[in-house]
Length: 293
Image 1 (tube, rainbow, N blue to C red):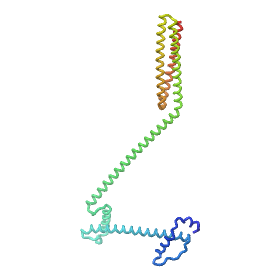
Image 2: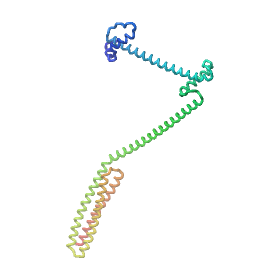
Image 3: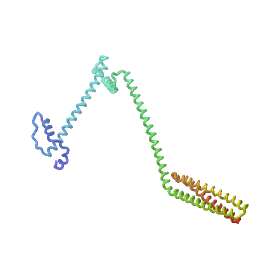
């Protein structure tokens, strides 16, 4: 052994005090030989020390196994004698097949924990073993059913997660488009509201001009028509307010691709119709005023 290997195994070395005591016990009653305490010799003696400990432990284990086997053999012999004594028989008096069968029967009785080999005891033991096995099979079947249910739930959960992930990805990809449409809807609503205010101011000017520049009868007729137009404008204003409220409600909710698209299309068409109605109402008011003039 070279010095490098000795240094690598220094952590596993046994102390010299332990080795000296071991050598004294090993050579007793003679004296232990005198040795030169070098690292190489210490390493080799440490290996021998461990081999000797393993050998001693193995001998102890073998002795315990032999003792247990002897105890089992003695118990089996006692059980066999207990069976043969009522018949005044000895194992040596029995034929070899009979002795073997009795030995096996006694072994089965020992394995089942029976105190004798009467048929009733075997029947009770077999019935108990059968019931235990049946209950064990039932527990196994219940466990299998639970495992199948858990697996089904896991697959269903995975499918729901897949669908939710797909829907989330679709919403994330289409959200900018829907947000842009919502902004356009709000902008159109603001334009319609601004036009409505402008039309209302013009109608008020027309109402004032009609009441001061015409006769009483014509002024009353013109006033009635202007009031009718004013009522139409109020209704249009309410419709615009409702659409703006609906828009605010949709903008507060998470974007749903299909529903948002349909609602935005309906709102756009309604806003266009409101804008056309406002323009037609104002144009009709101006035309009527011009004819009266």
